[in-house]
Image (cartoon, rainbow, N blue to C red):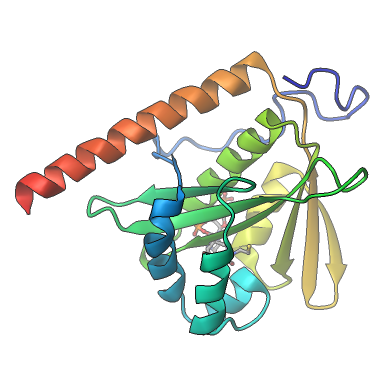
Length: 210
Ligand SMILES: CC(C)(COP(=O)(O)OP(=O)(O)OC[C@H]1O[C@@H](n2cnc3c(N)ncnc32)[C@H](O)[C@@H]1OP(=O)(O)O)[C@@H](O)C(=O)NCCC(=O)NCCS
């Protein structure tokens, strides 16, 4: 655990994300290379506007195919939320920026939620989960690139207390991360186990019904 980081930080260890009204537990699963096809299906389902918001440019199908093919599940973390039919309805990519200090300890967050599942808190949950994971991996900062008119994403980063820099039509949000705690480590472990169980149950029900 990384105790002692940000000793003078204004943010106390567990105050990174202000409390929001509870919407119930959401199973967030760690994605593996075997999920590449589902990740591809998820991203290809985004329309042009959403692809621009997610990638900062109007990513073609070929660019998305290339992006998914290049995903490094060992170095980075990908998290997903599956529906009852095991469709990947929301996913986050937490990239760990390689390099010597000052780049070391910095992670970059990207997220997408399918249109029909928006407004249910899934984007926020993936963000909170990624913050917890980045803390637990010893990261000190999270970066989020977003468009100025991306109201939903701006809401998420503002709520977390990120600093916001406007650069023309773009925004760079930076969130300093407090050090991990025993609580954050246990919370992630339990959440992960519960999400695995939830996935296996959904898969079994699908097999029985299928
Ligand atoms: C941004 C995105 C991930 C948000 O996902 P979501 O599951 O709908 O988000 P949530 O339901 O957690 O809502 C987040 C906040 O934005 C608000 N919000 C949601 N949609 C909104 C909209 N269209 N306009 C304004 N605010 C909105 C919510 O009320 C919520 O605020 P609250 O926490 O104060 O209640 C989703 O819109 C998306 O996939 N967009 C395309 C890709 C993208 O923009 N990625 C981000 C750049 S990396």
